Length: 192
Ligand code: GRF
Image (cartoon, rainbow, N blue to C red):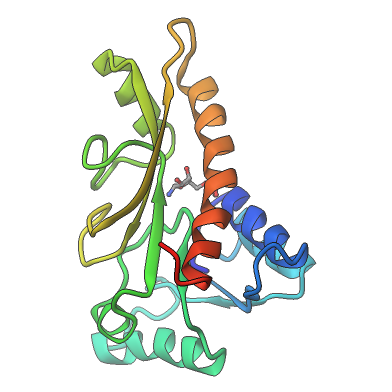
């Protein structure tokens, strides 16, 4: 898994694996942020953590930098890459090698409210400001753009009239934690 933030989706998937709901094991966390909540959750669960950031490796060529990801993924024999709040684009070498095997979750109904800058509370603020009555989650394959790639699954919920961005975020996260493990299970079963 790749994550940069709090790691609540990372935790939901680790829990689903620990509980044997998933047959897959989460064997690696890659993050650009060594202090993130996800890294802490990885430590508690004995999941290998690899910190890869341009800030740490400013002088590497694109190829050398990509190789850091490829090596970590190969060393852990990774079949599926699951992004959960990962704040960087996936490097082209990884996209090429794991084509069709990288998924992401987004806290809105793509293609609306996606793209650069649309993360965290920004998404939910934009939904509320737009006056939309529905929002939801999108799980999709990953390509070279932010929040792009073929959509696998969407689920929607009502936007509460009296709610704010924070309450909407909480409500959407609950959906994410329910459906992200479920979709991974369907991928495991070849049953999408
Ligand atoms: C989630 O809302 C996810 O949809 C988006 O980033 C957020 C990550 O939250 N891609 P968390 O770190 O899993 O709590």
